[in-house]
Length: 403
Image (cartoon, rainbow, N blue to C red; front, top):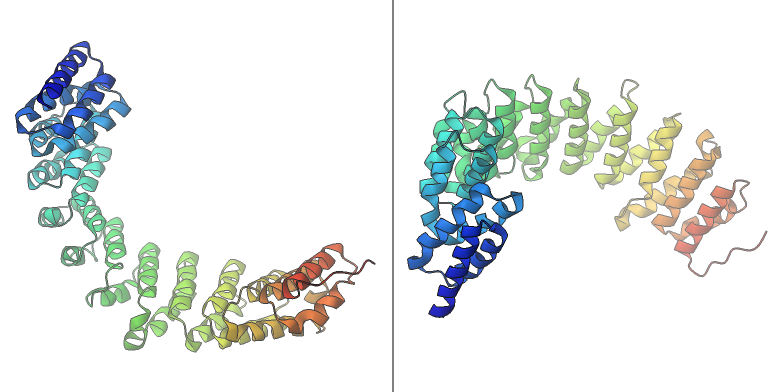
């Protein structure tokens, strides 16, 4: 074993002297398997020039060697990071590699880089590296939150860590004057089931910035367990009428997650308002199915009867075919059959009739067979084809007769 190691060291030296970095990396990868402390300095001496002068791929490979070498590689990487004259990409690799070491000694130079560098990309890499260190870096990052020039990068690093220890420092910046800072903090806090977070999100529902309101809405949507205690549906409902359509859309999704008959009532009110944009109406139609309540389907039935919009009627017909709960599929089938046998003008439109056939096939209820059999005789070829396909889903043995 000793002889083999010495031979590899000689070959590595030859490749090093020739500047053949690709071959040198291969020898170092073999040596790192048998490396012990007596060779670590030699291997480090071989590896650093590859990091400094290699191409992108060679640098990528050599960082794996440096990581295997352990803490002995930290000081030279720190020197590279602190060298303002060094190539930008080289400092990028140094920062990234230091972050992967997850060693206390690597925190200080990364923090210093955040404080002093004018290079935004390099600072972002340092922030990510600190984030990778997890709990080790939290105290240092918490201090950086107190400074205007490092607060955003520090909060992004803390957000990356995502451990409960970050909750306290993140809470200190949820009302920061900089939108990006409080947005990042709120988004990160939303992932924690901690009693301190929901009150902060509820307060943020009234933030002057739409982005913050949207984050707060979505954050609360993941806490259906608190719906009763905090009356979340009532608190979220006003955001259905927000000036910003993205906030309205997020609220539709949030309410569908919280569920309940109160939710379906609020959604239906907005759906039928003449002031509601079509895009939002379409999202509400989908949400009334996602809620998974009978009341949601009943409101869709009312909307079908009252709406003159072909777009909305088609969407209602389509989403009814996606009902999956066994206790609701019968109701969905009945709504579609009622439409098909009504005097509603929409049912005379070929693409809506096709959509009805498709949805009835997806629901798979045998009650639909007589109506689908009638649709086979429709004058529109597309309607016929969808009706035949639906019948085959419900009744696989069905064989259409030749006309």
